[in-house]
Amino acid sequence: MNSINTQPETGLDPKDWNTIRSLGYQIIDDMVDYLSNINDRPVWTPIPQTVKDEFKKPLPQNGSDIFQVYEEFKKNIMPYPGGNIHPKHFAWVQGTGTAMGAFADLLCGVMNNNNTIADQSAMYVDTQVVNWCKQIINYPDEGSGILVSGASIANITALIVARNTMVANAKYAGVYAAAGKLTAYCSAETHNCLGKAAEVIGIGSDQLRKIPVKESFEIDIVALKEKIAEDKANGFLPFCIIGNAGTVNTGAIDPLDELLQIARKENLWFHIDGAFGALAKLVPAYQQKLKAVEQADSVAYDLHKWMYVQYEVACVLFKDAAAHRSAFANAVSYLLAHERGLAAGPETTSNYGMELSRSFKALKVWMSLKEHGIDKYKQMIAQNINQALYLGEQIQQDSKLELLTPVTMNIVCFRFNPGNLDNEQLNLLNKELLMRMHEAGIAAPSYTVLNGKYAIRAAITNHRTRLHHLDEMVAGAVKTGEDLMKEHEANLFKFYYLTK
Ligand SMILES: *Cc1c(COP(=O)(O)O)cnc(C)c1O
Image (tube, rainbow, N blue to C red; front, side):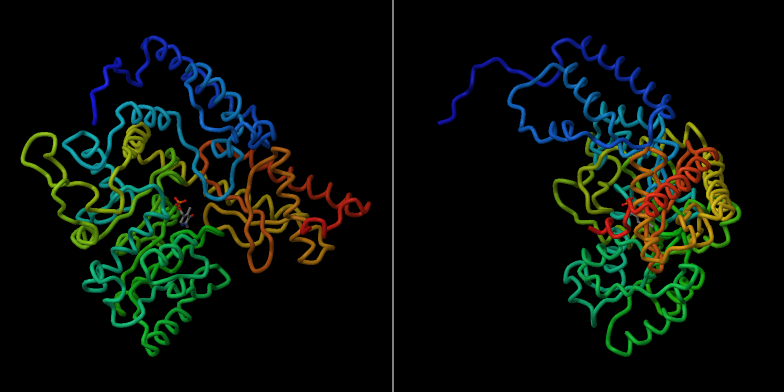
């Protein structure tokens, strides 16, 4: 039998709100110091084993003082970031964030909206931000969209809509509703999240055809046409072409106009992964090459990369709002909008994507765009591209460095090449060089492999970077490479040691 407990009730709020207020002031002070002194710290610091061991401790049974919790954070967590807020971070494609973005996240946490349903301000801000996302890339106003955690989920969301639109009844009958194996097409340089998307939507990544690229790392249109024809002859069912507006390896932009034409001619869905590169559309020199973004059936891009907004936020946009909605909408009794009261107002966002509960991620975008205005972002993106061009030039001018592909946007791939090593040795040498640059805190580019060549890769989506930071990376790479060669010549550094 249940009986009512007579113990005093309790809660999770502080006993004294002034305590939380004073911790809050301290956090704000520390936060401002942390951001404003960023140049005084190395881009990356290895985490000591003792600190890593802290994270193996078991579940706390009893509470601790909030100041103590915060001190632990300051001691063990705050000093060991991945470094992407640092001006010398160029690894993968990572955004920098802003001070106002951090405040937005704080305020978001205070309001703790569930940005899914209800007649609440967050729902209207969310819609406004999606509309702004269309305006940023000049996408049709009548289109629809949704904010999600990143381009990976944005791309999956797009392919779900593509599948359900191109195959009648696929929403209910799955891929089995198709009269053949559903097949999608993209370049071999396409991000692996699209392979995952193919797996998630049930076609399998084997049915995502990775078409070879040309020397420019752009999709080979002739090979694409041939593959579509071959697949059709063999009973496969092409339904979607995916174009890249900026590949992750080199920033290559596929010939989107041509892809669009092929998609229209073949009656295929045309999706664009514009994770960071779609935003280059803000820069006049890229407008023509990215013009087809405006006509794609769906486009995905991140706001946490080249819009420098805090993690996580991306958008996916659809030309056909009804197709978008019908892929996800389900009239369940507990989510229906009412005429008045809390349950009135905008339709649940769960009718437009996979997620039900959602954070108010729109707020940081809203605040950032209000703070700076879109013209400032145009300037920042152009500045990053200019920095990449400058970096490419510095590399070309240095006889010990080799630029591995022409710089076409904000990504630079290079290696240290003293001229007397074979490709395998160069690969091993450059991997070691990169790890040493990270450990020494010189700069944090990342890596990729281009045509069998290990490349040091710098992707600049960083509003804190200045040209001198790039000079420091170049000088650091040359110096580290020269040190390695001296060790090699003195037989201290053996190239094979890297693979062991
Ligand atoms: C980063 C990236 C993705 C994945 O985006 P997330 O926001 O990390 O999920 C997809 N495509 C390209 C080209 C990217 O650069």
